[in-house]
Length: 195
Image (cartoon, rainbow, N blue to C red):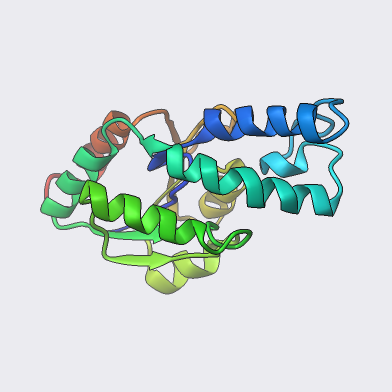
């Protein structure tokens, strides 16, 4: 089976680092008035920052947080097991859309950690077209709106809910998970050992 996988907040555990960096940036380099739009998923859209300030945050902090972030617990092991089971792993990520060189940071991190996937799609904030073109059977993502879109288009989706996510109603196409053990359990139970 073809499994689409987001990177940030799914394979890379960078949520807390990103939120911390945004709070510090707001306090030290902006007006320090806190989150104005708490329901925005993209961290830089939560504050009353100007476009210039958003760009500065991405330039100064996003790369640093990306470099410091670790692999989610269990991700490397489960990805390897899924490959051994015969699944095709396809990364579909918005990474690189705002800061192009952050793709290199992750590519190097995956190389160092010996994480192997079959294909990568970078700079893809809207992922439905890629999932349809690739005939993705299962998408794993942490962005609530992406997960809803996939489920509405009858693509089975694991909502890897992180600290920025909000509750979604589960249905036959949408299931919430919070770790890679749950991802592994879902794939084995839903698809069997051989996909």
